[in-house]
Amino acid sequence: MSVKGKIAWNLMTTKVSKVLFQASYRELMNLVMSTSSSVEEINRKMKDIGFRVGETLLMDYADRIREHAGDFAEFSKTLQLAYKVNSGQFFTNIDISDNKKTIKFTDAACPICEGVSISDMPGLQYCVLVSGVFDAVMKLRGFSAESYQESCRALGDDVCTWTLILRE
Image (tube, rainbow, N blue to C red; front, side):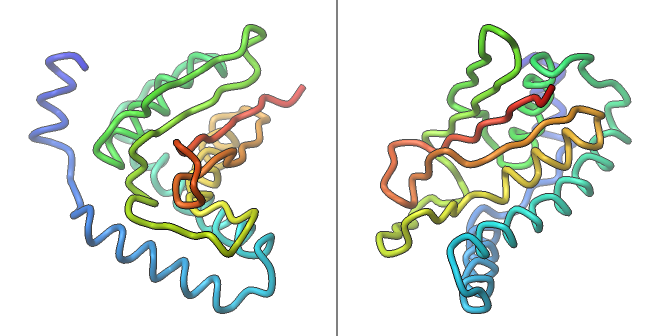
């Protein structure tokens, strides 16, 4: 991060308590789980919520930076910065495919599912809200892309991974 970025992060970026965020997210997830009949329905509802959150975040972010990357692969840097601003940390890794049409974001210390362990709901994408945010950002930026959560620490995976795929 540049000096300018560090100053902005420390002085200008509004922060939320991690414990408050995690507690709120868990209660939202509990509510969605209790009102859904399947894991697929839970995943869909949480991704839809993430999309609406993403719309709000992008509008706020766009008002502040006024510039965006031009192509899909380059936009990974913008998403990395947005993740830092909104979660307090960078993704652990970002992989871009050779054809520049697939981006994988990995977080080995995901703040959403930290401390959560779920063993009785195969297929649940606990952090799928991030996929919804990605979908909103891509749509609002004019990219025809879709995203999904590939792995999740809450379900026993080593890392949380989200994949974005540019459609033709």
